[in-house]
Amino acid sequence: MEQILDTQTSTQKIYKDKAIWVGTFLGGPLAAGYLIAENFKAFNDPTKVKKTWIYAIFATIVVFGGVFLIPDNVKIPNQSFH
Figure 1 (tube, rainbow, N blue to C red):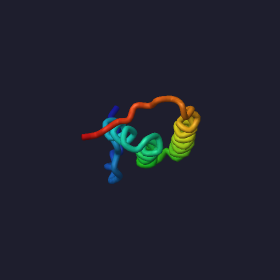
Figure 2: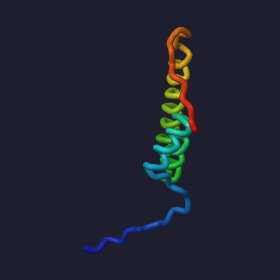
Figure 3: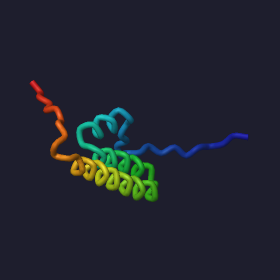
């Protein structure tokens, strides 16, 4: 019994793991959320797109909230890029 598979080529860009890692490092959780949500959008999965944005926004709030909760008397080393 022979099965015929309907293969369609997607014209939308798919972000690979490495691109998501770099985007997260440079842009934070919102950048990661954007890249992952775009992948889910390319695969036509709107429920995962919505969940991804919710998680990304929540993670951003947690990160920035944590930064603002650091006391003023804590010595954080300065980073210099030369």
